[in-house]
Image 1 (cartoon, helix red, strand yellow):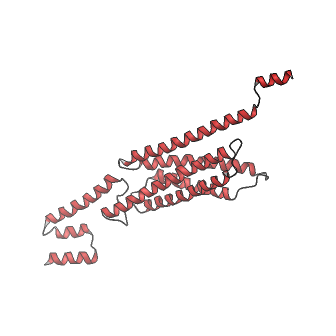
Image 2 (image 1 turned 30 degrees about the vertical axis):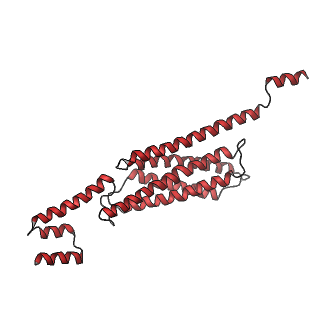
Image 3 (image 1 turned 180 degrees about the horizontal axis):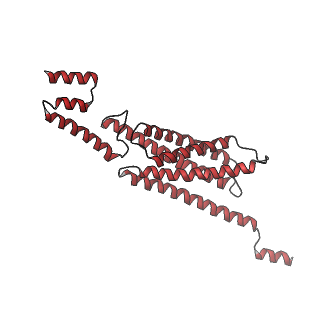
Length: 254
């Protein structure tokens, strides 16, 4: 009878499972082992699949762990797509299509679109990561967290500089352009480093998969950038030397 009363009270007042198991264990010790084994199994599932899910405050159980695991995937994908892909594409556009011989009239609109979209997507991913970190007592990842805050701060400054840019006619216009470009490259380098840092914190076989996927993306972007640089250099050389030696000799004879 007392055992039934304890069960009912624990369901109504949501008593802690350890205390409940201790009280029940006085009469039926095997119950304690069953409850503790179930708790250890749930903890081991969280620790095996991901090293950052232990000690979550708002979630309990495997279904809640799956929800948190999906949010981690969202956090990683948004950061890779925003910070790690769109921002470098915007830099490639500004580098190669703003000047002769690949000058495009719409390059600035495309650059602004890539930078703005990358910032928004990356900021959402950054906010998701901050929320995940605050939801766990043991989810520290200090290096990844500090780099993420630095990237977000510098990217915010760059966005403000882009929308509040100085006119080229002003004396500070040249210095503004230099600072803007340097800040953009710093954000890209730190973003790439932090993405690899975040991938390295994944405690599952998926880490190697994501590492190779992102490396493939970077290789493709690097090849495109190098190809555009070579093409631009060749076109510039051809424009600087419109005549060859035969043409010069022929002109002298005339």
